[in-house]
Length: 436
Image 1 (cartoon, rainbow, N blue to C red):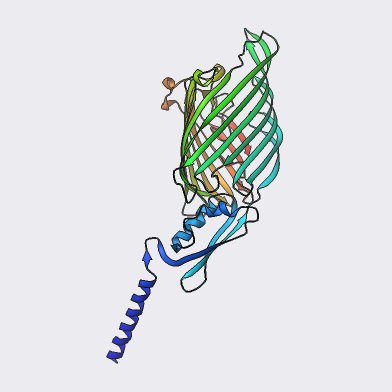
Image 2 (image 1 turned 180 degrees about the vertical axis):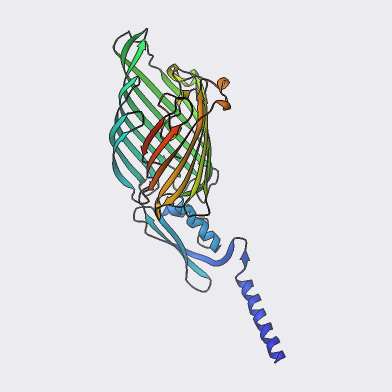
């Protein structure tokens, strides 16, 4: 009996050892086998190249379960799918079919715009989203809005804006984005103690080209960007004192870098995102105003382990300009996505620092509905010489977030915040995007 037991043990050991030679283990997980082909289903609009360029494997590669999971998350991070799964389907003893199943979100929709902010401004209009143009993950947003202002130099404003973003041009490491905006504003300026009415027309155009340092695989990591910015201000005198506002043209060189390491969990996010942008305007570029403008940000999305889709999200931003256009403060940092609990013009200047934190927790047993606890801290100064971190303003508040998971980057957001420093007050905000 002892000999039979020993013989059985030896046979089992040899079998296990042989199995380990055929299917080795690695730090990246168990080897599944060789991918013979890739099959994609569910991509009714999305072109296959948009999905394939995010994968960390290709036909002929021997892959692990960790590689498939990594690629699955990379496709999910595109933000255009409600669900993504990658399964290894056996084809023969060692070869597999990587079957990628996606469920697309709603890409094209038109939203009416009707809002009243905490300052009493009323905005009406329409917004047209097209979030997967040509099936290549191109993002387009066209906005037409009319806004009436309360208790400010501006009286009313008509805005036409278009933003286009191609995060990764198919089968290349390059990106392209474009921002166009036209504002037609009626404003009242007091000159020499006498009110004067003007109409301001402002055109701006900013095309940016970028290159991912990671040439293949997921569209994440470091992105270098460069381009131009062109602005034109036209002031037409209506009544009051003679026209004294200039109508300058601004031409600037734009250089930036971003590091995107954020993962999309559909109802929440994890990871971090940072960036820096330099805008340089000078007469050598054909600009009538010369200045240097710096902007930087850092965001961190921290999942909390005690409940799924509970998050602590934090953001730090800062900026500085050497000379503001038209001699008015460049940065106004109050609003629904910045320093809440303060009036529109209460915190503005040519340099600023701003910190936001939000603690988000699903409520009522619904993962798409989350309660928010808010903390905002920041201030703005005329110049960096005046900046004092001991002179920060802060606000706290509560809010609700309703995630519309069938749409791309669309949340319904309701916040109630109170500013506790000078000029602080209680204000209510409603928006259709995440704070950051």
